[in-house]
Amino acid sequence: MAVNLKELTERPERLTGGHRLCAGCGASVVARAVMRALKPEDKAVVGVATGCLEVSTCIYPYTAWKDSFIHSAFENVGATVSGAEAAYKAMKRRGRVKDTHKFIAFGGDGGTYDIGLQSLSGAMERGHDMVYVCYDNGAYMNTGIQRSSATPKYADTTTSPAGDVIPGKPQYRKDLATILAAHHIPYVAQTAPFGNFNDLHTKAEKAIYTEGPAFLNVLAPCPRGWRYDTPKLMEITKLAMDTCFWPIFEVENGKWKLNYKPKTKLPIEEYLKLQGRFSHLFEEGNRHLIEDMQKEVDRHWEIILERCGEK
Image (cartoon, rainbow, N blue to C red; front, side, top):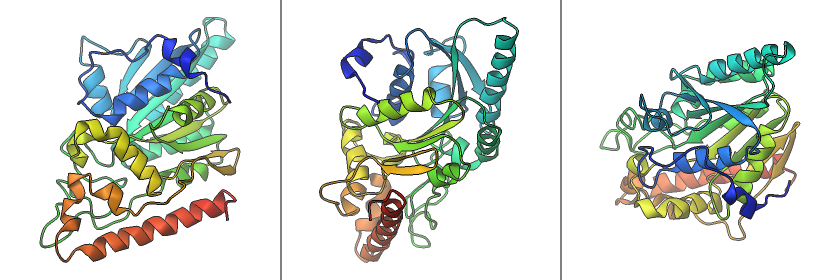
């Protein structure tokens, strides 16, 4: 599916400026890119779980969304949007709705990997024609930077503080894209805002216009939680891919495909050293922790290569 970037940039914004997300936040970049994949003539119903994206874009009586918007509780945006989609189909059959509406749910990793997983899994299993977008910033950023199951191992958070007792979060992160692929839904993809956004735009359009449930897992760096200089958003995203910490792939009707393979696979420390949440790993005596992370990244990358037929 070819993407005409010039045409996309000329489309009107569906997530407007004036929202209150932080400078250098990946969530707004992700949301704008996904919404831009909608055809101008189509309408959308957008549901957003409680989190950074919701509290910063829809503070009553103001909203940055130009499409119909539903604020869900932290744990149930999958159920909320699937219910709206079911109501739409019923009204469409009765001739009460003429326009074409698309249904898009957004949730952070806390509301997706953790307390929203049951709601998300149910919506996908039931086969609703909707897209669920996880903007993965690796912690519960809105409520104080607590660890989530998406938080990388050894990351320093307020509930897994790096110190003398533990060197940050003790567990590896959950592989959510694989869990969603195991639901046997038509489309699952993992992507990130990088380069000319071709991959993100292509996958967003494919997800929105694939009949049935679709899931996008999108890396969305957070300057507060990751503690990086705000202009380095794109650099950090690219390093996540070039170190193979964040593989870029899609699963279409059960078939895995790798979309990005770095020419030179960089060591994980190149990704870690720009983020304050990992600064303790570079202290004397902690080199083995970086080596442990490297082994896990290498192990998971080999699994992805095998699934995608690249080995």
